[in-house]
Structure formats: structure tokens, C-alpha cells
Amino acid sequence: MLFNNYSIFICFITFVLVYNAVKFVSKSIVLRNIIVLAGNLFILLTLVKEHTLIVIAVLCLLVFLIGKVLQNKNSRVLLFTSLTLIIVLFSIRNYTYIQECLAKGIFSFLNAPILSVEKLGLSYILFRLVHYLVESYKNKIHRSNFITFLNYIFFFPSIIAGPIDTYNNFSFWIGNNKLKYHRSLFFAGVTRIFMGAVKTIGIVPYIIHYATDYTTLTANFSPTLAILISLLAYSAYIYLDFSGYSDIAIGSAYLIGIKTPENFNNPYVSQNLSEFWKRWHITFSLFLKLYVFKPTIILYNRVINPKHRLLVTVLCYLTTFIICGLWHGDKINFLYWGLWHGVGLAINKIWTVKIKPRMPFSNKPSYAFVSILLTFIYVTIGWIFFNYSEEQLITLYNLIT
Image 1 (cartoon, rainbow, N blue to C red):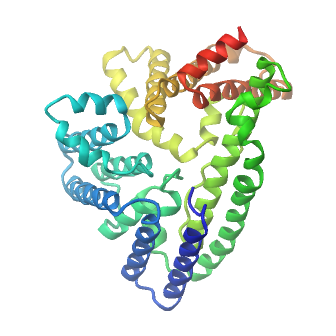
Image 2 (cartoon, rainbow, N blue to C red; image 1 turned 180 degrees about the horizontal axis):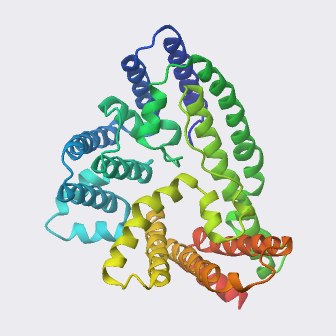
């Protein structure tokens, strides 16, 4: 996490003070962009080596130029080729199996330069690059500017775990000159950072050990009960830690007048899994919907009779969340977690379309309460796949059975 040491925190405070001072005396968007870029690079260099930033910057230049071409010429071939390129580069860097295969092939020379790029924020950088290319193809990018684009990619508060902003929103706020609104954002930002710190520093340290390792509880509880308590603790831990980081990232962006989108909205009070994914990691869920789920629907509709809409939706949920699971890591347990949610969403869709309309009590408060409880239980069970490796999952199964 950013700001987890004194030197980074001092760098951040210095950057905020300098940026706001310049913004107060000058309305130059170019100058503002340069200061933000300098701040982004300076802070990121405390976390990664300069080689990583140089390689990503070169890739950004390539994507930016391709985006410029796509904005003037809607070439599907160019879009597909460029998307394939960045996804392949990302896959080589992040998946051990692909690295092992590559090491034995004629492209083994690619291993060294790609693997020398540190992983910090690469998954979220991938999202931003995909977003920029697709929206350029749709001719929906406004104020296309390379320095703004670099700042969008390297924006340090949200580079590690989001929120995933859109280029147009980021460009709008970095060019906004309404100082009164900026002052309101500044004070709101201080509050959000404090809220995030309470979650990540004040609460998370007390539950993280119980949440991530059930064996810390086996001295006082049976293995089955220890696992259940640990799962509940993990649900609390991952929400508090993740939403706390999002609060800090959003608040940090507010301090320099950039209104970053919200990322969480009380996800554990969701009445079904579909609603959960509209409340949990909201910007990531929106990305999946726009750039994975919807294109997958179009693809399946071409090979499956459109009359079978429910079947297509079910297949799209499974495909989307298999990709979601694989994006989180190269271990098989992440695939299980993705499948768990894909199957859950498919069941929820079938229930909503085929069964719920026939339920006479579906509008009663008791139904809502039971729905929230069942959704929470389903999500909580799913975290077991997210937290433990395949070998650990086998051990857990043997303990329970």
C-alpha cells in the first residue's frame, strides 16, 4: 500500500502542497499536468526501479499513438492487434506457466526484458490501456493529450488497487479550474483518508492473522469452527482493507482536485450476487461488464440461437468470471473463485427469471433479510478459494470431512 512508510508520506504531502500552490497562482493546464507527472514519477520511483517506468512509458506512447489512429480511423484489425499485444505482454509477465513455455521456445529472448518489469499496478495499467484503446475506437475520447494520458496511467493513488478511472473523467478533473470546488474536494479528501486509515491501520491489524490463517484459532476451537470463524474474519478483513485503501486513494485524488469514482457501496447488504458485484469493487465490475461481458454476449449470440437468451447469459457469466479469476493470479484457486461467482450469478439469473416471479412472498421484508443473509454466506464461502492455495484447500477439505 502507498503511504505505508514515512518517506513516501512526506513525498506525498510535499507534492500536494506544491501542486495546490501552483494551481492557486496559475490556470495553466500544461503546467499542472507537468507537476502531476513529476509527482507521480517521483513517488513511484520510491516503489519501483526506473526501468519499469521507462518500459511502461514506452508502451503508453505506443498505445497513445494507436489510439490517435483509431480516433481517426475505426480499424477493427488495428484494435484487435493492439489489444492482443498488450494482453500477451501482460500474460507473459504475470503467469508462470506462460513464462516456462516461452523459456523453451524461439521467443525465449522476450523473457528477460518483460520479466524485469516489476508487477506493481500492472493489472490496473492493463485495464486503463484496454479502456483507452476501445474508447478511442468508439471515438469517445476527449482532450487527447499524451502528458494527461501518462498521468492517467501512472496516477499513484490508484495505481495499485484502483479505483479504475476513465480517461475522460481524469482529463476533465485535471483540467478543471473551479477553485471553490477544489477546496470542497480538499477537505472531503482529508476526511476520506482518515476513514481509510481507521480501516486499514486501526482495525485490519487486529483481525488479519485470524482472517488469513485459520490455524491461529485451532488452539481454542475445533478445526471446522476455526475455519468458519476465520472465513467470517476474512470477509471483514478483505472489505475493510480494500475499501480502506480505496478511501485513501480517492481522498488523495481529492487533495489535488481530481474526483475519482467510488469503488464500494456497502456490498455485504446486497440481496443477490448480481447486486453484490454492483457494490463491490464497482469500477472493476463496470470494466468487466463493458469490456468482457457485453462483447461475450455479442460473440455467443453469433453461434447460439438468440432465442436462448438465458443460456447465453449463463455462459457469459461463466466466461466473464473465469477471466476475472485468472486476472487475479496464476494459481488454480483463483480460477475456482471465479467459477464460484460465475456459477452463483448464473443460478441467481435463473432464479430471477424462472422462479422468483412465481414466489408470492418475494416482496416481503423477511425475503429481503433472507436474501441478504444467503448472499453474504455465499460470498463468504467463496473467499476460501481466494485466500488459500490448492494444496491448502485440500487440507481444509480433509479436516472438515
